Image (tube, rainbow, N blue to C red; front, side):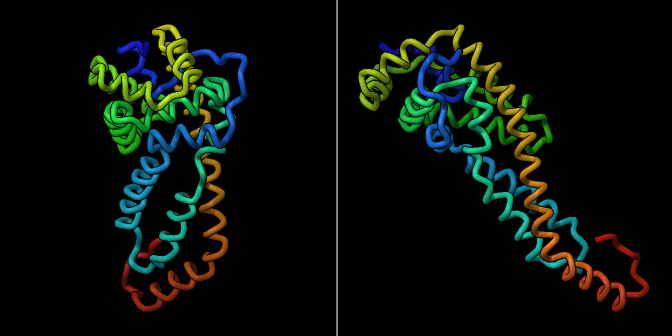
Length: 231
């Protein structure tokens, strides 16, 4: 039997200490991230941030360049970035089990508020760790006991082995341990993601740099009285 309250914390945050089972794989991580809409959520925040940047760019700056940088950011696959850090927090079996749970109606119901809280934290410029804490706080404030119908739906989506795994890990102690583990993992992942984004931007600007400089020079020539603007 699934623990009604323990399931709530598992939906977004997962499990506790890693058992001696298959190490987390990129495919397992991806399955879990798909169920929690992590890549989509990241994409929304990135798009909003780039729209703010577009509003602040000088009029001479080539629009397609900033579009290319945004697309380069969006093209970064989060699953392989996250896997090395989350492998300390959950196993491949657990990730795939949680992906199934997250795809149920109950899973979607509990994931939504946490995802929104994490996005809002990112928009506010909060640290990755604070974003994770905001997601957990949102879960805690909105969680409700699962109905029998929801429990039946979750159990129907899992194999007997997965149901046993879920019950084993549905404890407050395991949830507490994973909460801290996931905060640490997400913070480390964010550092690596920032490095990859910087590389992506540099690649685009190295390619389009001559065009940007030419556009800047042309603007200065055509508007000699305008204040000089940095590219």
